[in-house]
Amino acid sequence: MSERLLAAFETGVRYQAWHTLAILAVLIWRQQQPLRGQKLIMGLWGAGILLFSGSLYLMTLTGIRALGMITPIGGVLFLAGWLMLAITAWRNQHKQSGER
Image (tube, rainbow, N blue to C red; front, side, top):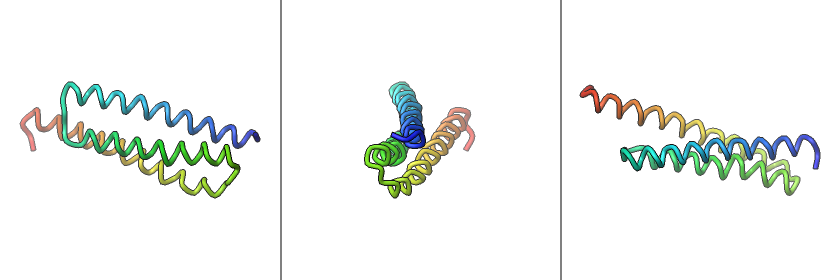
């Protein structure tokens, strides 16, 4: 395996690990305080893991570089999940403080 492919594989592992931990944190938050938006956050991150990390794993294992075109889609899903997290937290904060 080339150094470049190994680096791509390690990037996939890193992003999968961080987003799995983030999903677990949202699950804990949801258990304590179910809010609209939390399922969407986890779904976006889950799909991001599949497309971002999955495409890097497949590219590394098969050598098919065209799979790298899928990776940015997963990255966008990761970003959308983080944006949805911010929106959900913001809405919850304003709901609790009585503002709308």
